[in-house]
Image (cartoon, rainbow, N blue to C red):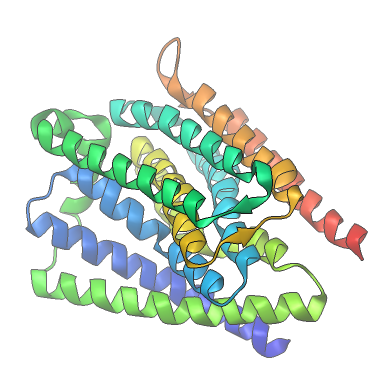
Amino acid sequence: MLLALLAITIGLVILVWSADRFVEGAAVTARHFNIPPLIIGMVIIGFGTSAPEMVVSALASWQGNPGIALGNAYGSNITNIALILGITALISPILVDSQVLRRTLPILTLVTALAAWQLLDDFISRADALVLLGVFAAIMVWTVMQGRRDQQAACHDALGQEIIAELDTRVMPLRKAVMWTLIGLLLLIVSSRILVWGAVTIAQGLGVSDLIIGLTVIAVGTSLPELASSVIAARKGEHDMALGNILGSNLFNTLAVVGIAGVIHPMGVGHEVLTRDMAVMVGLTVSLFVIGYGFRGQGRINRVEGLVLISVYLAYTGWLISSVFLAT
């Protein structure tokens, strides 16, 4: 058990560090090839911050631990909105200026509704997974086309300006950027393998389902890159970047992470995932859409709403812990 705890700790540390190196290397490499900033922000950085969830869930599914795969994806989404956005809003209220994010909020809500609908039969088949990946591919193609269609307008968007300012601080030669991208990706795979082994070992030792481990320890751990980037962005006053990190990550988690895991290994899902975890995820996503879209003016997530989000996360975590004790 001690070795498993050590594996989780070491795995998470390396995972977070390698994800940061991977994101920085990939973003700078894209910048060298003059890729539009919104594409770098929504696609490359969004993919990079979700790389830990993607690799961990893929490995867990490959090894026959679907609970970790699914719990990691959905738990990360809940953590991103309730805990990370809540903390970020407490540090600095989030103002939504970007039209790109205003378009992304309803898309994320519809994608979450699709994910909930697929769970009605308590099973994610390969066909379900392929639908998720197909929707993901369509959104990525649309994002790239939008970014290339009007690069000038994209640069004037609030999110585009924040991404440009952030990329200007990350300067390195192309060779070094490619090197960090490859090293980061390699270490992501190695650390994810260590992390999954430790999580499975602890779940078996405590008699806890791997779903609970995925929803809690693994979800929080793989969401640390989003926490770091969102808090840093908030402290710099880059509100759209902070929210963009979360929206991009949740889109990747819901579509690509679950899709890849489901293609590797179709997953039987306990009904509590729909009635408990998905219900919370849907509720948080709809709430984020309502308060962030700004139907009557500028979207805003203030400190009070941030505190409410954190309270929801604490209540949800308490719900998970109580379910463990009730099951024993």
